Length: 154
Image (cartoon, rainbow, N blue to C red; front, side, top):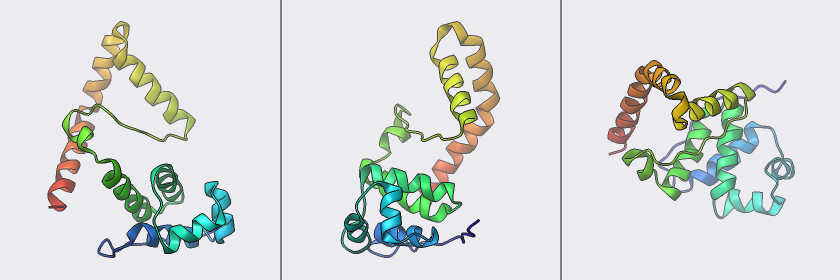
């Protein structure tokens, strides 16, 4: 089993995504070729992301997943910030109309899917109400954390 260390990314650097990209590859112990295979991109693209232009779109989402799965939260957060800057998160702050989740754990998938079914299906209104009541403290905590992050970034 590989031992991975936690890394801190300096957000003051101009090319944080490229720096984070390289650091993730090295933390995983991957060559550029191996990392390209992991991401299903070309080796040339890996080199470009590390030197010229940072990744975008779907590749960033995959990088968030990989970093999180390998207990590298600073790197996952760095990639997530770039995604947030690319697409913005105004829709989440304003009306919570849109949210994208990447779930890999079968239990999480089943649980989240069941909760969504309960909330969306009027036949399960009593279940939805019970779930929403049960998670109310977590929702408030998340709102406070989001507010704290927004204030800290000002």
